[in-house]
Length: 161
Image 1 (cartoon, rainbow, N blue to C red):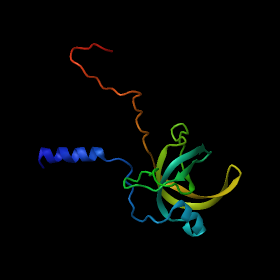
Image 2: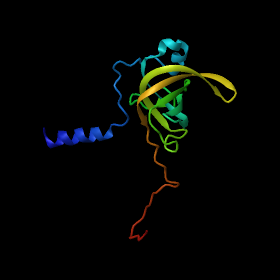
Image 3: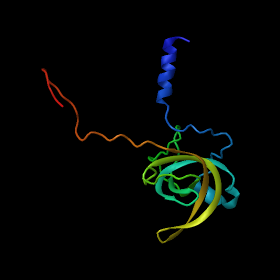
Image 4: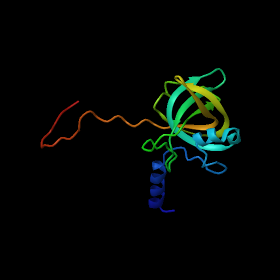
């Protein structure tokens, strides 16, 4: 393999982002809202879902993450430019630090629909699809932008710190 081809392959690999979960044996048509509508018939279905974290709650034996569903784009990232769907709960068997897994972060999860659970959002009754996570991907936060443009024109020498 020529060095140029190896360099191009390395560069393309470096550009790849996201989890790239396999869609084999995954019900790609099942959304959190459809799972609630389907009820117990959805239990056991494998899914890949994602969205914006609402709240992360550590429990004694697991961590529960409440998520507002968004459709996934080609890289399996939640597409927040589209309309949100239903809320769902992720059950993860290990501790997740709430300061890292905080509200407004984006997450993609693969796992199995475990149940449909009744809950409340403030004073409203709500039904959540619950997914037992096999794997989670917390999307990096966008880099902060500089407060002002950094354009400098001129001729000469500048000493700065």
